[in-house]
Image (cartoon, rainbow, N blue to C red; front, top):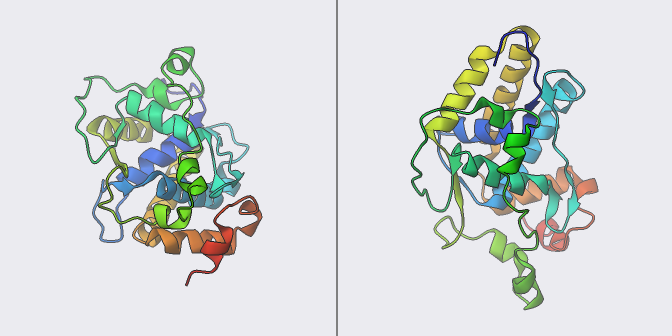
Length: 228
């Protein structure tokens, strides 16, 4: 980025990358995050922690849009971001698949919004991934709390290119923008260390207990609230 040129950085995309690069409870960095539901909830917790600092400022596009959905608070645009970041080769998933990295990081992938970047966005993902299992009588909560080794559960990980993007954004920030960038990264580290190692059932219970206004449409509310 050119010094002095203000471009709004996508807080949601930056949160995904920062969560994936942040040290976990064992202080290990760049450990994968298992599952889309867990990713949704961790990003949600970061959005809540950074709302006062980042919302309505000139440096970040506070583009979180969490609403009450079938499995609790969800930002449906997050699915598109995950696809976009993989298309840009900043993250990878599917049980740690290896993606060949392109040589030059694209900082424009992180700013709001470039026509070239929008053209790379994949088709919007089908939201109701568990609808068939739910209609067939399978307990959706049991599907959501599957073990880490469950076949088909995506593992999200940051690539070397993703690290480069973060480093370049960090080094190009100054003044108030640097302070806000650090505040978001610190929030990601805190959330990753506090909640990233929790069993999914425990994480869901915590969110349902503390953000009940965003669980009103949940089809697993009674099961989650009944867990201990």
